Length: 159
Image (cartoon, rainbow, N blue to C red; front, side, top):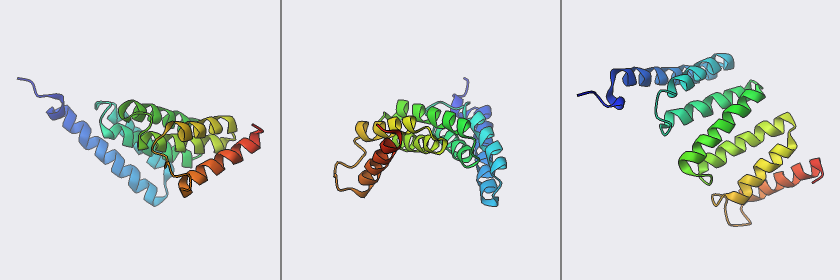
């Protein structure tokens, strides 16, 4: 009888490789070598494609690589990765889950950094209007900060 995928030798090898790539990426960040971190996280992402989409390693790989690409100012790559991350976590946990909100807020940062204020505004509106994770308490400092950011962006683009 064949082993299920999760216990096959190839699966075990891929698991070990993924863990090593992520560890190496983290070590590279600690040394301040973001380019090396990006290479290692990219390898981890490639390796994570072997696992089921619902496997958290895919999400961790996407997020780690996207964050490094953002720090390297590779905005197009960061946007692509955060957009993919948002899609994955929305499909797994729904559009209102904390992982989806987190991905959208990182995407917002990419848009703001690039001066794409309309995209930033639309992303922030999506976070504010579609998410029960956002505190219902209108006095929440977090909610006030997000609303203030939206107001600032709208003033900048005149909408």
